[in-house]
Length: 179
Image (cartoon, rainbow, N blue to C red; front, side):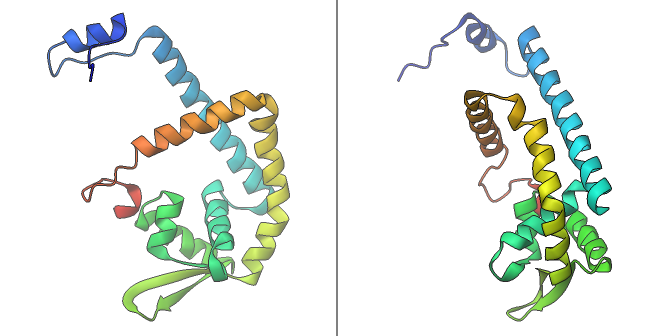
């Protein structure tokens, strides 16, 4: 197997002593900052739309969607944290707020005294049904209508690669839902 660098940039990186910082190139810096700028603006755009239409932040909408898609509209809290990519503490706080709105309820897990289920209520399903069309329109306008089909495909592939690299499977992985 040939492990020789394939570009001048890779050769430069391979020649640097261990521990020396490999700074972003000008192009990488431009791409990175474009990503940061767009992701922050997109999250704010979607959050404002959901606050306006349903009085909830984007993260709460995602939790309701996760429950709506689950069998019986219920998930173990640990599974919902993993699906939502958030810490268990943040999930517990969010579920408490959703419970106050009557959109979710908690149920004890009969097979595990420490475990709980989050369950989407009929009221939660109703607010999700009312809110989803506006949210889908906001996503479509902000992302998909601005990209060609080829750009959409490339974006999906890129995000899958990045997500895979950030979710190691080793037991000691530092992932939000394990904290």
